[in-house]
Image 1 (cartoon, rainbow over the protein chains, first blue to last red):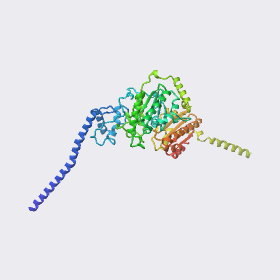
Image 2: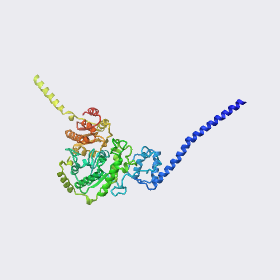
Image 3: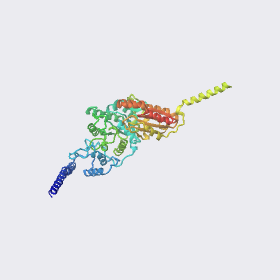
Image 4: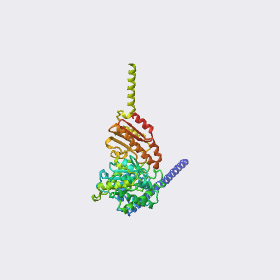
Length: 355
Length: 156
C-alpha cells in the first residue's frame, strides 16, 4: 500500500512539473507573440496617423488606397506596371516597400513614399495629358542624351525622331566634344543639331555629371548650353528629362553615382526649367521605388534600363507633352538658315541628314 | 592539239579561279535572318540585347533605305557595346558599302567607349563584319569565335 501511495505522489509531481514547464513555455513564447501583435498594431496606427496628417506622398494616391494596394500585394503576385499613371507608379514601388528596402521597423515615422521632385507644385513639371499622342509627335523631335537615352532609343520601340546620343555624354562633352556619330566620323552636338530643323528638343543629361562639378558651375554651364541649342533651333520646345534614379546596390561605384546626387541635380534641373521656361519631365514619377531609388529589377547594372522600362518611358513621353502652338513653329527655310549659319561656325561641316 | 587543249583547260581553270575570288558575296545565299540573329545573340553573355525598331536603323547605321530590302538589329540598353545587326541589301553590289558603314559604326563606338568604358573597346576590336550574298552582318559580342562559327554555317 505504502509503495503504491509513493508511486502516485511521484506521478502527481511529474504531471505537476510537466504542467509547470508547459505553462512556462506558453508564457515565454506565446506571450511574446501576443505582445508583438499588440505593438505591431499600434505602430501601424501611428504610421497611418502620420501619413494622414499631411506627409508628402508624391504618388498622389490616398493612404487608404495605398494600404488596399499593399493588401493586394501581399495576397497576389503583382502584375508588371503597364502604365505610368501616378497611382500605378506607387504600385510599382510596393514590392520593394514590402521586401528588401522597406524600413526594418514599421513603427518609425516613415512616409509611404518619398517625393521625386524638390518642388511638386513647380509649373515647369509637365502634367499627364488625358489624350496621349502617338509616335508621329516625335517626327520633328530631336533627342539628345547619354547612354540612358541611347538605351531608350534602342529598346523603347520608338519609331520616329532624331537621336544625337553618346555613351558617357556629360555637360562638358555635350558642349564641345565630337561625340555624335556620322558616316564621316564623330561631330559635336551643336554641329549635329544644325543639320536639321526641329520643333522639340528632349535632353537627358546629368548621370555622368553626378559629382563631377560644383553644382553652381553645372547650373551655369547647363543654361548656357541649352541657350546655345535654342539659338540653333529657335522656337523649339525644350524638354528636360530628370536624371533617372540608380539602383545603388547594383551600380559599379556609388562614390558619386548615388541617389542623393540624383536628387540634388534634379532639383537644379527643375529650378532651371522654372526659371527659363523649359519643360521638366519627371521620369522618376514611374521609375522610383517610392524610396528615392530605381525600381528593383529595372536595370542589370543599376543605371541602364531594361526594355520593359524603356517602353514605359515612351508611354510616359506620349502622355506628358506640350502642344506646339502653330504660331511658334518655325518655317522650314528659317530652320535651314539657322542650320547653315551654325554649320559655318563649326569646324565639322557635315550634314548628317544626307547620310 | 594537246597543247591547245591544255591551254584551253588552263584558261577555263583560271576563269573559274577568278570567279571564286568574288568569295561569298557572289554566292547565292539564303539566310533565315531571325534564326541567324537568334544564334548570334547567344554569343552575347554580358548584356541583354533588345530589338531596335527597324524605322530607327537607317539613322543608326546611316544606310540608304532605298538600297536595303530589310534590316534587323539588336542593341544594348547602353551598358555594353554589344550589338547584332543583319542587313539584307536589294543588290549584292551594295554589301560593300554596308560593310564600310558598319566599320564606321565600330570606329565611332570605339572612340566613344575608350573614354566611357574601356573594357568594351576590346569587343569592338573583335567586331565581326561579314557579307554573304545580299546579307551583311555586324556582330559585337563576348564570344567572337563562336559567332564566326555560326556565320560559317550560314555560308558567310
